Length: 264
Image (cartoon, rainbow, N blue to C red):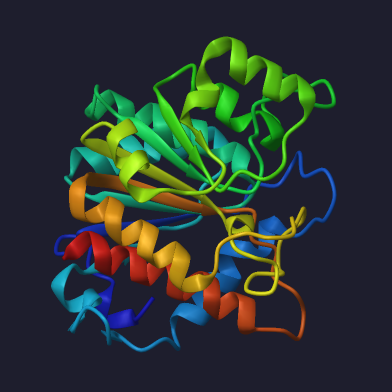
C-alpha cells in the first residue's frame, strides 16, 4: 500500500498479512500471497474510475506486520477495539475462522459470505479439522454463512449440507438479491480467489473451470456493500506465479475495489 497512507491513527482499514500455509492439498505457494499483493498494491492507481474518488484518501489504510495463525484472532480483536476494519491477506483459507471469531465477539449478529469455487464443508480432511477444505464447517460452528459461486463439492459435503439445511444457503449461481436476503446486517466476506474464472485468476492451488468474471464479481460485491454493513474481509488461496505479475495486480486491485465499495 502507498507509504503515505501508513498512519494507524487516521486509518480506517488495517491490512493484516497472514502468510499461513500448512494444509494446501494440491498447488502450493499461498504463503507468498500477501507479499506479492502488497508489492503489486504499490503500483495501482489510487483513483477509482467507477466510484469517482481515491479510496486511500477517503478511508486511509494502515498495513500491519505479518501475523501467524496463532495470534491472528487476538490481533484482529485488538484492531477492532480501535474501530478499525480488518482486511486479512492469506495464506490458505484455514485462517478465516480465527478472524470470524474475533469479529463475532464485536458483532453478535454476524453472518459470513463465502465467495469460493469449493464448498469447504468437510468435517475433517487428511485427518485434520483445521484444513482449508474444512473452513466453512468451522465457520458455521461460529455463525451463519451464505456460500456463493460454489461449483465443486464432495457427495459427503452435499449430503451434510442437505441434512443441515445449509444447502439452502449455497448459491451455485450467485444471485445478489437472494444472497442479501439470506445475510444479516453485519457481514464478513471471505474471498477465495478461485471464485473467479481461471482465465481471470489462474494463480491458485485448486482452480475450477467456470467461475465469475471480473465485472461479475464486482457487481455482486457492489450489491452486497450497498445493502449490508461489511465489517471486514479476507482474500485467500492466492498463489503467485513467478514471472507473471498479472494475477498479483488482479488480487491487489480486487482488494482495493472492495475497500472502495465499502467506503461509498
